[in-house]
Image (cartoon, rainbow, N blue to C red):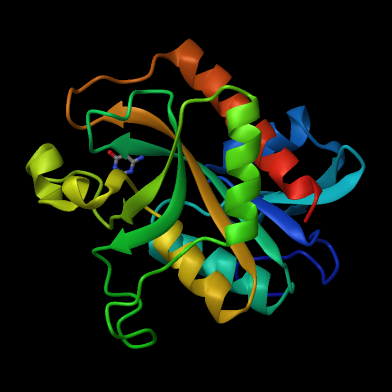
Length: 235
Ligand code: HPA
């Protein structure tokens, strides 16, 4: 169907979860979805469709960074006519009020990428879908998660030279975490009149150097995936 995706039209549900890691997509399909079937394995960037509590849901890996994510997301929206996209990922903390394991629900996403420059000028501010955002915040608070509804920065650079200082004054302007995909996700969802949200667990604090341990990573991941799936139930 596309150079990057062999799924047929109709193979994806209206709602797709987007982890970066293909093996995480497989893990979500195998551990959360019922009757999951593999729909894409081009470049091993795995995609699956199944159901969650009876509702059709898909999961598609995006790879790391905006250029990779934007290919999969653009095709899901343009070719497969997907309506709701929820990124489930990790992020680095930029402010000491965010602790490892905290959940960041990204209301908006600044970026150092020039990807949008030609298409969305005026320092366009990519933003989340309000319905997905408010529903996920409500569910997260019911579950007692420590949640920050904040802005993130979608950076093209993982290995920044100067730690948290590389992000300048952003942490003092409500940008509490760094990840690598949300801005492209939000931009494309707006362009295709779809709904999008990025939910990220903070795994590495750039302020203190603290990192999540393996056991906490697994538990946090499970909680975040369930939060994303339940957010998708009513839309
Ligand atoms: N930078 C970008 N993305 C991330 C990080 C980081 O430090 N940690 C987890 N995802």
